[in-house]
Image (tube, rainbow, N blue to C red):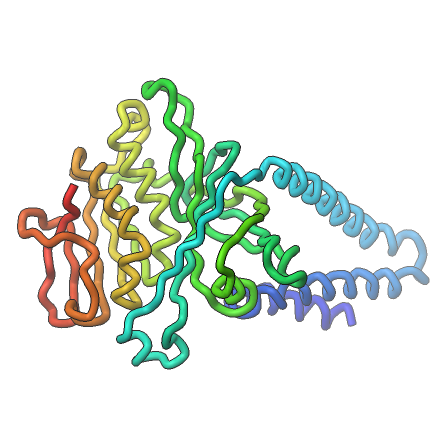
Length: 322
């Protein structure tokens, strides 16, 4: 039984499986782990103390880790006070509905904005576990990780300060799938959300001379934060000393033309700040003809670093009017 449980744990821990059945994975993983430990103890108990000491030590280490994790969780929850919660919904275009009947009239994205009572330090590549207290009971106590796509920083008292500014609001781009995210599509408003984090590793792309960020569809949520930091730090009088990046290229292939609406405000900010440094180049690839949706940028022939490509094969040079 122990061998079967451990083999099942291995295959369930594979990333493709976790992505496919994340919520079930959490429950099954916990049950199998407890079952394997119990079966192992039952198997070695008759053999004497020398055989029991190793699984007992492993169980104690797991208990210690769980205890420390719970302490950190409740401490973070006490500090995760949210001042305001905003939900914005985006729908797919008609062309997407024709290609995929399951998306007809369905929500393509939920943008979640959290205004914090206590500003906090965040970095690109980090994620936060969110718990939605307004959902049904079975989802109310589930903590799901969501990537921080964007944040607004509090205005420092001294622009020449060496300290990192704190985020006063966080933005998450959530694409409804099954399970908890599908329930978010049916919620009109949110009154109470608890979060734990941030977690994750910053790749420190500011240490690279040339940076290329590539995304497809919702993948833009994972690279926006890196672009934000590189562009804002390069334009900052103090932080620019930490950045050796001289070129930042972003290539985004949209799954649907309407996806440009998801991040249009943030792309405007990036281009506005990048205009001072000429750091940024961005190319967007749209799946449908231009006429099926409004282009996300104001068109111009003056700047070549911003281009939109449509199926007719003709690139449209574009920029955002400031």
